[in-house]
Image (tube, rainbow, N blue to C red; front, side, top):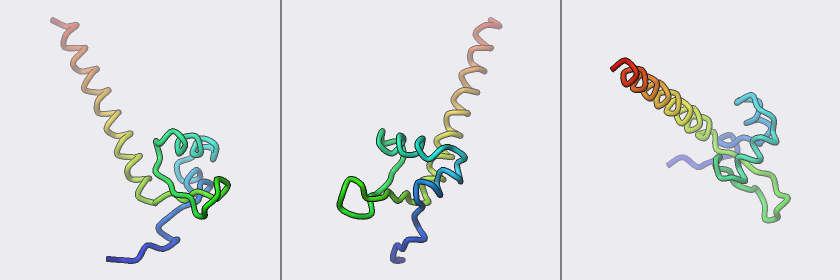
Length: 82
């Protein structure tokens, strides 16, 4: 198995740039448990690092929501037409 290195992780700022949101939005999502992140260090002030795989997970979750909304709309339009 490949050894994990710092290239497998992103800082909050790097992650925020990639997903085009403010870094504080990422911090709040980490605190709420919506984004997986790890502290590098032992104190509460230690910086977070986010696995790059979180980008794919978030994209998949968003795609799932879009598909669910489309299905709900289709079902609603069928009910209304009956």
